[in-house]
Length: 328
Image (tube, rainbow, N blue to C red; front, top):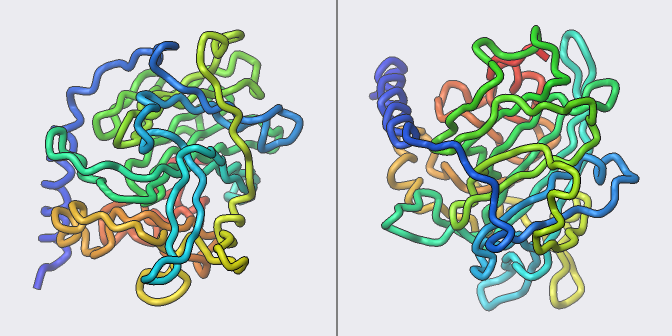
């Protein structure tokens, strides 16, 4: 039987391998107006509209690179879900949490893609269908954004980006005004707001793998050269009431059985084969619901350490931040 110390060594070796693969990340360039499609949220009259990020995607001719709309249909095998890449939807929610020192508001933004396509060269470890991304904007009591939390809807590839409105005493140890490498992607550690806390934030998504490639604050008129699509906002709860052909509704997530809380049709065969055994999770990498609390959905862990499942669970956001070293 594998004891905790042996498991720690296995996880350490795997983490080192990930680090080696990530070590050569270069400073990203701004996307080209000739090769990028911009998904632009509506106006800024409402709180969720005001802080909604602008998404840049490359190679939009490939359906799997376009932000889509989850839908449901009836097949011979029963209810199925898929992503329509021709109708972009940004699913949103407002959630509040408190720490020992302050109260905060989280603005959740969830998007989905048809798939991460299978590929050997380059190897797409996360190949699978109905994949997604979460961007969480944490606001302080003055409704100023202080922290961006970026993560795939499987809990993978977690990244944090603080803003200049977050007091330094609340930063995690070792944070600074520089760049960070997150599994091969070069991201800023700090976004300078320059007194404009309600300005737009841009997020550049890498083709095929849908990794977040860069994040920055948009300048005045910066979007003008790009081809833009207006992106609809819908409540996150709408994902639990997708309409079927017969007029009934079904959830985007499994509602019973061992996959309760996981996205229907989300199976990550390569992550299961290569990581499931040492992560002690047969469903590692599968996309899931981000529940409101510990009784809603499945554990949304963000650390591959099996003993850190609960502490790194994003459903309890205050505990999640403490685990990752933030002092909000």
